[in-house]
Length: 465
Image 1: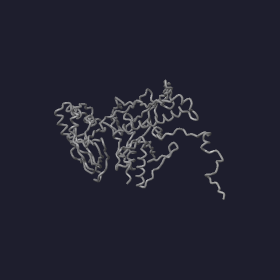
Image 2 (image 1 turned 90 degrees about the horizontal axis):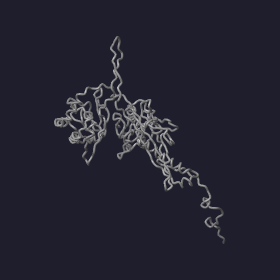
Image 3 (image 1 turned 180 degrees about the horizontal axis):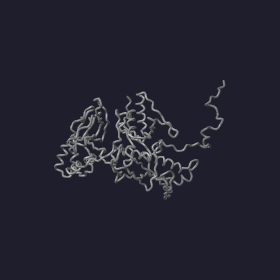
Image 4 (image 1 turned 60 degrees about the horizontal axis):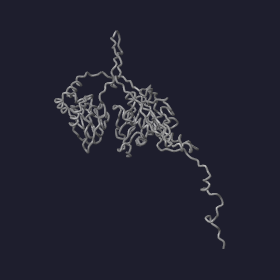
């Protein structure tokens, strides 16, 4: 009986694919890179040409009141204020006696408040300064019918009650209530006056601050311009002038650099179908641009997060980014052009909209449909950090030099430029036949007026209930 040969027993009748591949040309992709993002910040910022590498922001004179953040150090459960940080208090601004500041820091008493506990009550005598090391505090006022009304929130690094240092008749204008567990350092007026009796420098400084005449300012802290309106007859018209800041801030262009190295043998022999040097340079430039966007967000000198004015930093009412918080952020400035948020913050905002039955609209930007709120696009940016506590920030800004907004700074026309303000310079070939190229990008960012930029801080991104 004959047995029919199965597929496994048949002789091969044609060339196999494994052998055929030896004669075939492989179709290849260009080198891929996961680090590349949309980089919306670089695309949406108006870039201003800066000659001489420096941009000076001239502003109308403002009277600084010391509304900066205070930094603390923690050792176990013990929290202490850095002495020099007490200079952020208005009454101690420009006071530089480190010994006295150290004694004031040592006199700060640490106290913990539970959620819901009142820290200070409206109308009571304000005889102490509170330094908020950790937690969130709600400012509560009285509405027109005697009901409570929320006036805002304070978070880590804030302070309140500064008037107690220079006035014994100061009273709390609103109630301060902890909405989370809070760690607070308390500096009493009695301790300050006790130390001033023994320190001539502190006593003279506080006396000089108390004797300063009250400066006439507008709602933004700028020196007032005297005007007359609605008068009739031969009224005396006031004389005035517009004063400028004596020492305006200057932004120097920052730099990001790297040296790209390519072996001459690789550059000579392995350039088909793609040029090796071009691909190496393309990926290097992508990484450089990613670092540039990171610096524009996080750099301590010019980054948006660290240079946002203290008065433009908001806290979410319930921790999560709600539509109410986004509305509050929008209301702080005119002509809002864009939001910038971590993708997880955008998802958290979407969840809050879903809970309320709201559907955020979308707008078309450069051929892309981008989520928006009140017509302002919300662009994703993974350079905005998410903390270990799963909190992040949402940025809202007005852009453009004509709008007194946020602008990017660059200097195009530099030698060996391949993109605006980005150059690639040939550095030579060493004794090991390695070709070197210096890749350089120059950039910075400037906030022309404080209300051009606002930040919603401590936004929770991991709450699902």
